[in-house]
Length: 84
Image: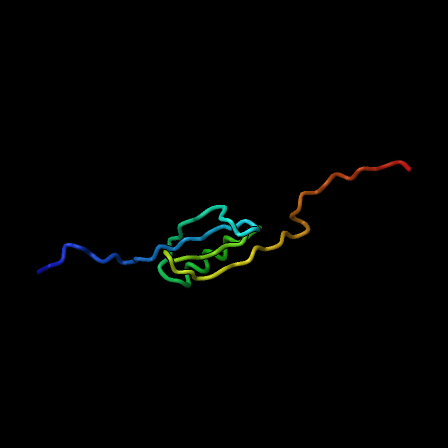
């Protein structure tokens, strides 16, 4: 008897969780990846001032720490000249 249900080609549900410094979730992004290695590359590329966790459904895959902003990336405060 033929089955009426088809198995999906890719049953993974990769998600990248963007984390606040205290560990709370700031945002989530679905990732279109065919395997863990591809999902890891995509999630790692999302890291900036926030850490990222990679999940496949309920399966935890990897944590990527936030990158510290470079000195050149910080907003520059205008210099104030004070007469002494």
